[in-house]
Amino acid sequence: MKIQSSVALVSGANRGLGAAFVRGLLAGGAAKVYAGARDPNTVNVPGAVPVQLDVTRPEQIAHLARELTDVTLLVNNAGISEIGPVLATSAIDSLRRQFDTNTIGPLRLAQAFAPVLAGNGGGAVVSVLSALSWLTLPGRTGAYSASKAAGWALSNALRHELKSQHTQLLSLHAGFIDTDMARHVPGPKSTPEEIVRQTLAALEAGESELLADAVSREVHRGLTAERPVYLGTPE
Ligand SMILES: NC(=O)c1ccc[n+]([C@@H]2O[C@H](COP(=O)([O-])OP(=O)(O)OC[C@H]3O[C@@H](n4cnc5c(N)ncnc54)[C@H](OP(=O)(O)O)[C@@H]3O)[C@@H](O)[C@H]2O)c1
Image (cartoon, rainbow, N blue to C red):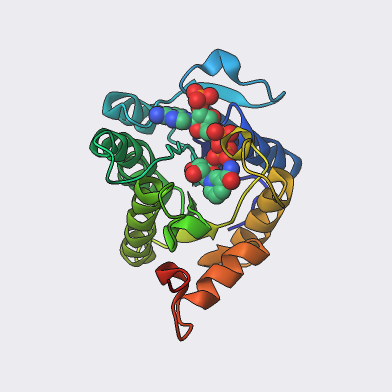
């Protein structure tokens, strides 16, 4: 997938990683970048084309797929993170909200735009996942991790199904990124710009999966450790 002359649609493009994707794509030579946002008036990247997109609203997704027929790259970036134990009574509602936004929304966008991408020669879809697709921070990220784990499984399914139409599916995993979502998290964080730089390079290299920082690589390695990382430390 070449960034030069591509036409991208980025969800959650008004701030954080999404806004960095819009800037990076334009700087990388994209012909057009549609910046999807729940409120398009909050998009403030010069050169971007703001479009209304709430990923939990099927009618908005269907409308965009009818209108934006030149898209060659879909960046499924929009996401929410709600912290809390899964034993809390509020966890079911929280799980539903996070699945709607982090799991079902991206799938619905991929479904709607697959024919558009096929019609434009194949193109690519980026799934913004997380190191927390493979790991839960005890008592905190159970529902978020579940939504990203399901997003990971669906991205693997989509990769197979999109292959015959020559659409590349790139899954992006990272630990903490310096955005509003991780504002209250202490410790090292990647810059959104660095994550975007690596993602665009991985797209150009035709890759299927990007582990964009040391944390995601360590968690991934830990899946096959003698005591797998998701079991945590013994009592
Ligand atoms: N930050 C991290 O540490 C980290 C690490 C790994 C992966 N990620 C993933 O990276 C992606 C971007 O997150 P971020 O760090 O940039 O978070 P962020 O700063 O909180 O931004 C989230 C973006 O998603 C949008 N959004 C939320 N719900 C939406 C909906 N229903 N429809 C459309 N847009 C919606 C927000 O729009 P509004 O302004 O309207 O709320 C905002 O633009 C997410 O998928 C997140 O899970 C983040």
